Length: 363
Ligand SMILES: Cc1ncc(COP(=O)(O)O)c(C=O)c1O
Image 1 (cartoon, rainbow, N blue to C red):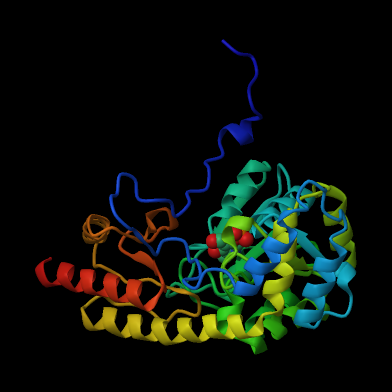
Image 2 (image 1 turned 135 degrees about the vertical axis):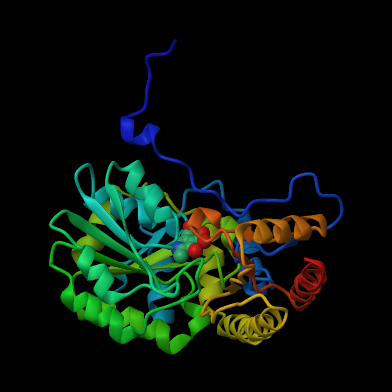
């Protein structure tokens, strides 16, 4: 028997469960489980990857200066030294946790928050603390009521995954102002582009408003670059400096650098993706409600119909799988009576709606 054993908190950490693939399916599968962009990447990002493909024998710039400057310019950030880049925004979650919380410390997030916050807390020996939500939405007072002397980080995805709900910017400002100075406030803007450019600017400005706040973003959703694993963050100078100290020297690969720079400047592609999402999200919510599946408002690129019971949600999930349609079961998020459905292409959205109509007609 081996004597090599992981640290106790690592041994207890359960891995993140991804949206996954449909095992054993024959024919084409409709993938609506991982909130990916149905348009794929921007054509300009594909061109940029082709242009750098012949250079991947050379390590990327360890400072990622061009990528950070391009991001800063595209989103109106004056000081690119406070922009950091990452291998997916998951890496930012991990590196912030590693830097600021450990055994004995608490990490706060809300009841149906993105599950990597818990995985990251546990894998660094910190204690995850879950704050109840009301109507699938985080509440400022509930969060503040859960803060203790041991709280080190508050993670808040706004909009949140998998609920699709968000707090207004005024509530984020109230949180910023009311959190004690020892708590780092991480605003996760993975879905911010779907809300719109005005909101993107507002959460950028939150970082400048108070020294306790970090914004993290991803290229995996509206940019359609999930497989490249590229994220970025905007941080107070001291926090960015800590991040740069502990990240891997080449944490972002060269293809991601090229694609990310091209994608963040392709505002037409981003606007087209957002408009398609806004249009189809409304159509899907209306259609799901009309078939007796209560579906709340969503500010992101997915919807969350309710099936009345966990058994019926599971039966609907099985029915969709039999139709080669993969959506996301969210029992692990405390929502076993719901399914999360990504807003996909017009064809795929219609297919999932047609299948659910057939399902609800008989069950
Ligand atoms: C709220 C939220 N934050 C962060 C991420 C991580 O994305 P990535 O690591 O691909 O950037 C996701 C992915 O689903 C998410 O939903």
